[in-house]
Image 1 (cartoon, rainbow over the protein chains, first blue to last red):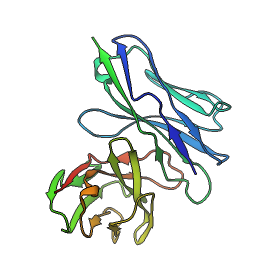
Image 2 (cartoon, rainbow over the protein chains, first blue to last red):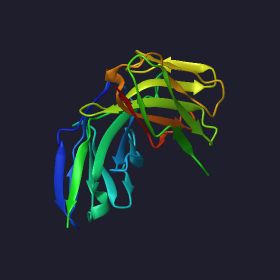
Image 3 (cartoon, one colour):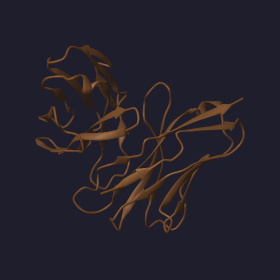
Length: 117
Length: 113
């Protein structure tokens, strides 16, 4: 079974500063993928970034980067130069990349990020 | 390019009534999913479908029924709604088994009174 833990229910950051959102995971699958989604107050789920467990480099997408530490089973999201529009709920998720259930996403409970002006 | 749509966006129903939430995608994606989102639980998978006429249970399937007669549609039915099914429901799709990205619909907020 897979488990995602996000220990920060809420985070605050000043505009233009960087912020790290924590995510730890547990899985017995040898190959897996890690995801971050953003959910603004309007409710839609927006895919941000993906990291494969065998990827050699940490994933980056614009101001988003994923700090992947496989031995520690952590996949923290780093947002650089925070903007007011980054205020949202952020979900970490994972799924196995092999086997019969390699399309089932397991989500964490989320972290609510507030960016202060 | 409509993408993935859900209807209705908001629904209030009474305990014991049957209600169907609709999901439609225009990409011809093979995989479709239904999640529910509740405070303190994140998103949990209810049912998924690998193709038309192929569906299977997720983490929390009790009280729900799905069907998929056409690739583009994946309706979710609450056969006899209960208050515990008050939630926000998200439909999602992905291109195929190897595609890593799931695309989410806008969600349906369901209240059972």
